[in-house]
Length: 178
Image (cartoon, rainbow, N blue to C red; front, side, top):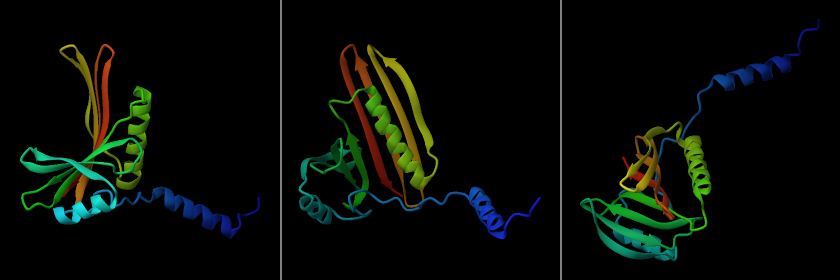
């Protein structure tokens, strides 16, 4: 039996080393669309305007000022909600995805694709919720995941409410400052 060439041993050792090396995940969670945590409302209004989107509602949600934005271009993105802290700086971005032609399978594929992309970047998720139960005559389903990093967190949720032929489904992605 002939000994293996040195280059085969070198490549084999390298492959074994790769297999034992833990995956390196991005540690920085930034808001989407080129926004920045603690960015002020004036700067964000400029970004929204430059993107050709518009603020369709301003209100207060859980004690925080919230702007509902429509017109940001991303497949199936219905609206974006920006939340501001007491100092009027950005603290959370919520992306709400819906599509009138999607059935349950399409929503599951969208959710699983988003989860896989986030896991590739931030590592394994913590499961926050996996529940399907009736609420009166409405069957509700919620599935939620979270990725936590020092700079912030991301939560991904699927929600469904069904009664007879009436169906509401949504996937939401929540970016939160650390």
